[in-house]
Length: 359
Image (spheres, helix red, strand yellow):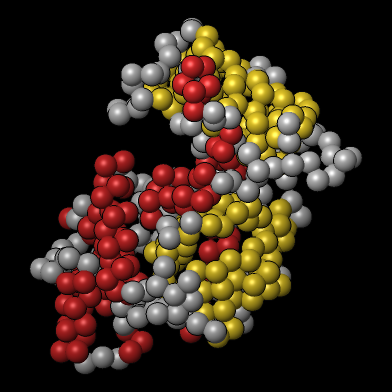
């Protein structure tokens, strides 16, 4: 197992610059997510050697491969459309990448059999791509990529053309195969749920820049900035009107309400709240219960909001809220979710609130 490191990798066009420094630790999956056009696929193609960067380095297992030809980098790639040859059967597709090894017939057959067994497709050797399901085609594409024994495998939205149920099953298959075979992977997708489910680490990109790279749970609960929080949809970002210190506790005042911020203080007397926001996870807010809060001695942020729409989400309800002119989504269990049109007071533990900037 080897690591993949991108050191200050840059590619510029007149209207766009993609710049990234990222590390995929050996034997892990780095998921890269972001809106369409943010530079995810460009980044992947620079790693693969299909696009030459203007500056920076691609390091595979400690070896600088920035100037190396694609086929000498030890990197394989699984494309969005699988790119299988329709006139070849499964064995022919898998064998395509092995041609340069000039294997004998028996050795080639043994290698193909082993690769198909690795992706649970034994016995599929003579089927054509049109005879396979979407999931089976995806696994053939993976077997063909693994045939060249890459140290790193790149996935460019390989499941985007499949239905939701199949996508969920296949992303589990990809993780299982990666764990079993031990390769390092970079997985690019615009599907946030998929990125969080598949990645050991998650990089969020926007406008060609990496805004944050951490384990998915950290990115969800501790976004680095407002752009990350809003892309993740993990909670509201309420503009701060002013910051006050009350009995040694920093309080953020917003149009929606007031939020004590545990463990924070105004370090700079000239601090200004412009472009500063209160953030808390969307499931942290609960209907206000003053008696319980007073009895516990806990500190809570408090705000009022009107529910504009309540969307049933199986074991939860997602509610579009309006508070102080800000629209955001909160998640409730089915018993505590407000009905559309109702105005309710809510509280959030101070320890769940933080400040974010829009940079």
